[in-house]
Amino acid sequence: TSGGDCPSLNACIRAILKTATARNIEVYGLPIGFPGLLQDPPIAFKLDYESFASVSMLSKGGSRLGGFVASDYSPGFDVLTLDEKATKISAGIEQFGIDAIIATGGDSSFERIAELLQHVTASEGEENKIKIPFLGIPKTIDNDVPEAIFSLGFQSAVLVAARAIASVRDTAESHRRVIVVECMGREAGFLTLHAGLAGGADTILLPEYDIHGATLLDHIKKVYSENQCAIVAVSESISIPQTGEAATYTTADGGTRLGGSAEAVARFIAD
Image (cartoon, rainbow, N blue to C red; front, side, top):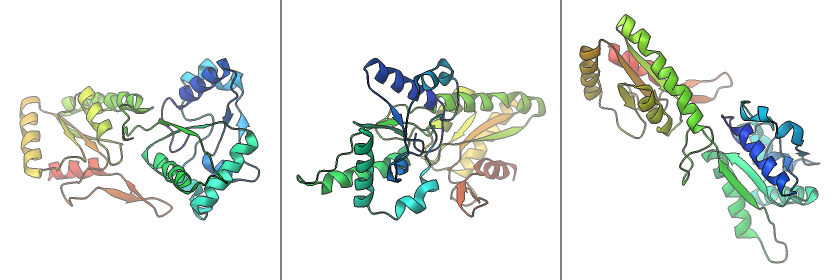
């Protein structure tokens, strides 16, 4: 399970294990993903049917298999060339007798995997052929994997975000407020759009569209004059009116993350 966790990962693992077992196929788990196959010995274990195919997997969050976030393993993973990675991973696949790898991931996870597999395909020779059979299952609340209509976790995230948007309306009505709710989604606005529509937001701001400050204010004023309140749903990666750039903050380890667009928009409306 590559990338950050999201709803339905365990249900996906359960479905794979049950389907494979019905066909007499053994399933192994890679608790730290592809980097596990680079270790000596490779890190993998056979999935226990009683544990990983139980009904409790359908409602359990996170990933019981264990997550793999690329940044956690970049130091050891990125020092190797693509050829070295491909060779080590192929050796690990051969050691366990693996016929194929099934991975769940979002756009960034699949970009890294695709780079590796495309390099292998381009460099393989007839005498020393490297094979890495692979099946990818789109998994991201951002729903931004190309060619995928819906990714695992997206609809559950929409439900949670829509409930949050709808739940603040009572407070907005009671205290005659304009409330701005920020949704995740990184550079894609799918989650904000679907949650905003389902949650009854009066205004939805997406990164795919430019924000015109005067138009935004005119709309908020109109909604407020009619309802004495307004709910605004904003994506975390919109270009905020004050700077024309996405709002970010610095993490404890010195990294930069998206976040703060709701506060910025709220201040813009208030001013």
